Amino acid sequence: MDWHKSSYSNAAENCVEVAEGSETRVRDTQNREAGHLSFSGAEWSALLGAAVTE
Image (cartoon, rainbow, N blue to C red):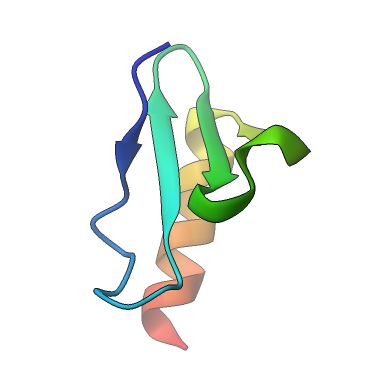
């Protein structure tokens, strides 16, 4: 799995990493061992759309 810092993360300490593929996985950069959340493509698009409009 190829993880990269999300473009939605800020330059400070609040960062998430994303792995994209058949599903999108998201994890806390500073707490990687805690696991990750998985989203389907439709769920990820809906989440980002809602976050951008807030």
